[in-house]
Image 1 (cartoon, rainbow, N blue to C red):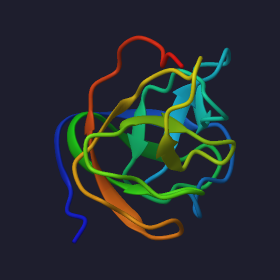
Image 2: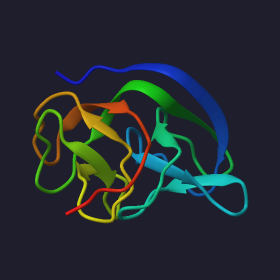
Image 3: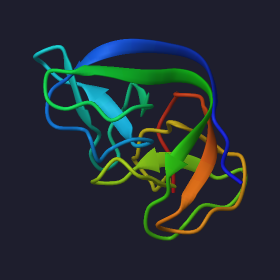
Image 4: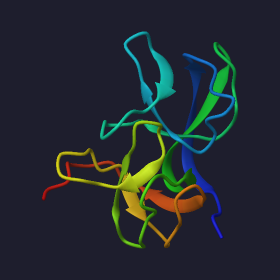
Length: 123
């Protein structure tokens, strides 16, 4: 069961309609607004609400957070990265590591990730 326990969060301006993006990784864009993270990039955190463009996005920066799980699912202790849609996937070589999977989770469902940004995955 994916539960949510962020220990640190900030409010950012949503750079687009993120109303369908709750529990996905987001990144800070050049315009200082947050957008859904893309494949393998460094992300600031995981969005906790459903803001529309220009609205207030609550972004978890640390702690154990609920995430949408992407293709391939997750296995507990996997290093986690973002896919092209901001969903959590097992990090591949060159991907920014955004956290560690806390449980097994199936693609299309929800899982828990300990946010722990740092480094890039190796082969």
